[in-house]
Length: 566
Image 1: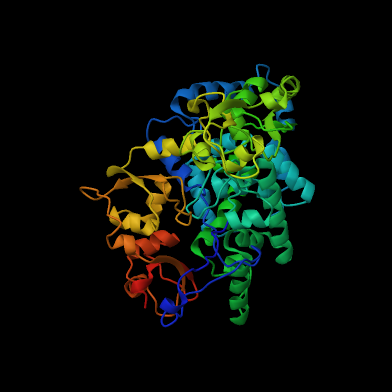
Image 2: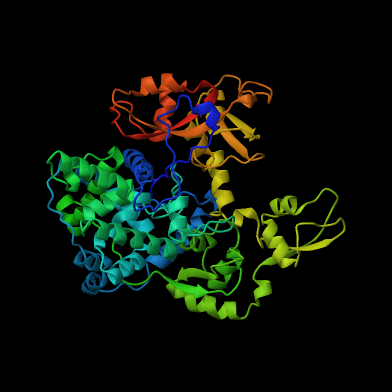
């Protein structure tokens, strides 16, 4: 989804005299936004496929890279049993039940477009059939449900392939534009469509809720653009306002207003061609030398109502599946358990659903999470206790019937806790982050504790790395808030990384995130000089190709020390 247009918070007196080009924005409908999507996309997987196929990696290597090494074998065995039943149907029967046949019957977009951007994408996919294998393997859990939902709404079946472009069917995908999940919703757009986000749970990654929200969004965009699906897709990426503005410019210049004739942001210009190219391949794979992995036209999962909070490791045991499979089907849960506030449901493989329901009925709700009896010590607070036991103050208040956050020394608290060690929850948010931070990279590894007033820009500048690198190494986006006390891992490019004292110039910096509207004659160098920032940082903050010219009216994000602002 789109990276949210930015609100610019700085002192009016400091900026009123000079920053006339800085823009601000309040809340607005995502249908009217003019911000381009910064989605996780498929570039990372493309690079992995290219490396694997040029090296010794096998073409069908399992995809779930977030799984801890010690659990990969168990997860692979579980998926093998699910994906390859002992009895195989005859070839004709498999063809009749193949989901690809059903998908093709719902294609309605024009696949005969002869455009260089589409040809470029087709050529890459044809050279890398392993990529198709990988995204199908990832998508096999979710595609049946997505196709069902698309058919129920009368939408183009091509939309079922959109998560390939958005996230490469990685349910845990998180972009530097703060977009999450299969459909890559940013926080504000997710909130607009009712996707809740909490410490426990992020519905932007919920297979059921996010699919419903994405298809609702796409349907509204198609209606806005009079049923033109290419324009609707472009608006899903760049915002309805961006597409409408491009159409208006073309009309004023007596030019066509179809997608292929519009001057749109670079990412959007490639976004729709990617989907068209994928649709052409899935429509006729033999023409491109690709053999699609078989995918049965049967549901992969069922929804089981739990009625209460549930330890995910316990759920896996009751269902008779690997805990990683539970996380992959329920990627919205950040921690070791479902959210105490709901949704009180889990997706489980179809063949395990009845086993799970039967076992669940025998477990009282109070036994579906483990409990620890904790005696409050001097210096404790609900905040410190909740951090210690991976829960939240509100949960502690709720389960202990506390009317406030006040506690006393010697008081006994019941605390929900994981039934297994942390390694058992390999796909929880904390475990995924730990593996990301431990991955070896170039530079000197530094552990840095965030202090009050810190910004990504300050920290990146100290260590001679980019803002986006610091964010990516720590599973964050440059727009995410930095909470004092949070520990970051930085692969510093300085010879002897040091921590700058709070009394130094950085500690006194007044850096603010602002927006700048490109004017005629502007260049990256000119803007960088004007705001005393680095060209490379501007490119990183805005996902720019420095070899391309800026367009008048283009919106940029800048992190500016307002003491140096013009």
